[in-house]
Length: 465
Figure 1 (cartoon, rainbow, N blue to C red):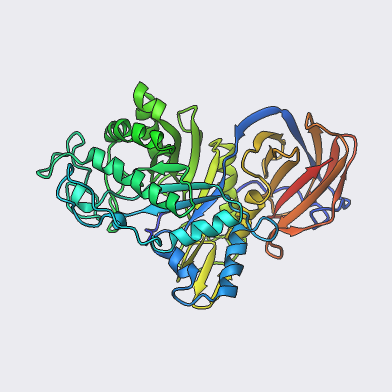
Figure 2 (figure 1 turned 90 degrees about the horizontal axis):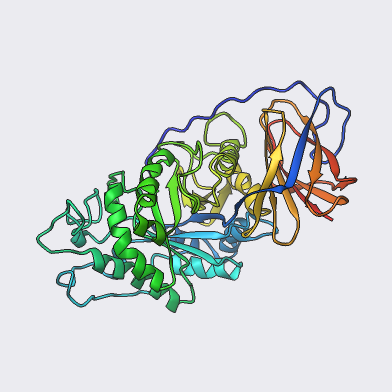
């Protein structure tokens, strides 16, 4: 269902060999580095981390194709449980033509909506996610129904009729499409799910053989001014434009920011990282999300660090870059669970499933960096140590350290302006042998702590007074 795209992982500097292989102990080492965590340096707020089960994947997870109730619960726990799983906090839902698959008779005709209360399993999944505490639901449309488009079909691109350069004999479908999207959200509301965020386009700069629709940046601005007031009046935040590359999204964001009306209507700018990775912030002061990505790969892969480019280490690096280079407020992986040679986090196979280290790469962030957290300063002179730090709303501090070196690195952390100088730091380790595994606590004394990050490993420290 997803096309393959190239993704390059840059090799990082190799550090001098040091002794010790645990995340919590202080072994005698021949080399060490320092790091400063500064609570007075406040960066972006965090909305959360998420996933999608669009294109029928939610139905497979629900068990319609073999997943029994006990295994279903295990998979849900892996994705959503805050104690044993990833604790993901955003669910991205796909909108297709299901609520009005046939032309009601033109853009000004009375709509003929239908609602099956299932939406390919997504309603069930949203209800399950809500039970785990998720309250951020992002509905995004891959396309308008085909009869609203220049090519007359859901797939293979085409443009919404009525936009500049998209004249159709059937008329102007802009408002009808806006109403359609809001009606989809109303149906979810009837099922107890409040759609917080609503998007009208997915990869508008890419023509796919499945659901897809083309919009130029100018057309996205034009439709935002039709859709925005209707969506906002219904209580939804507008997201745009989910371009298929981060650099490509900059063109859409720039166009929206250049228009005073559109600028005020879009709450979140979102881009994907298939065509280009996060290399800096989007040109806006609004919220930004990396709203879809999975690494390139043609076979199922469970490895943490095998050099394939679609292992867990690759995903951890991508999350780090999105947060620290792009200053993103949210990060949404593509499939949580899928089938076959999936690049998702979990592979479903009848009543069986397998877990990739990609899940734990994200869990080391998502379980401990909660919605409402603020990224704070985290610096180190060691180029091979990728650091990020966050203050959660409960006052705890989370430090995430990704060691790109081939040897363990002893780190002396100086904790400044975080609100306390004594306490404990509990490490959680992910590498080839561990999956967000809790390690022995490290004492915080006099505003500092010392710990070792094993080679090619990801360690998250939860620091409390």
